[in-house]
Length: 296
Image (cartoon, rainbow, N blue to C red):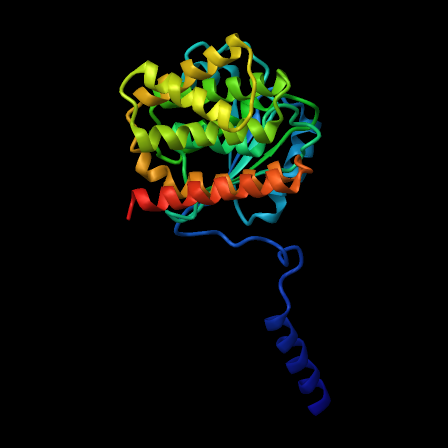
């Protein structure tokens, strides 16, 4: 009898220590910020949806909220959106505490062919989205634009009202970014350019389009980026729209500084000349110091 009791006690002790089968790696529900929201592209087949769920590790979450993004959502958040557009790129959004910033992870990089993590981050900041971990996936090669619309919809579902003018400008920003990349400018340099121009707009508060044009010209020269006149005008048009948005640019300080550091690392991989890279690092350190000084 004593042996039986000892065995039972041992089994009970193990049951209090070992996690339940299948729950060992499950992320617990965040009762403060809510469960992650998974947004699937509306044109995914069942097999593609399962593939995306696997890429986003949906099964690792104790609970998620699932929504779908369609061409009609494109019309809702983007003025010239096509309601018949096919939507494939998907995302998982996990909210974070205020001040934690944005973390963007493209978990299927071979299938998101145009939009980079930094481009998503820049566009999301323009749209007014902060403090989240966002994972993006697609089951086959796509540009990645529908994921951004899905992110907008996820925030609306969570009760966050987004300014449609800002989301439209953010989409415009994503389009300009991908067009500049398509023209031959490296992805990291595109993100670096957009981030720096927005920082200058925040600092200088330009009142006219001409002042925006000067900022754009200065940064193109500083970063040694050559654009066609058409692409240059697209960039000026975008930044003039951003200038006119009802944005408290001071709130961008930390996010833009963090984004600058991320881009700095990526630009480093492109540059072999050590002396030039040292000047770039000094440039970004100066940006960080300037941003901090604005709000001290």
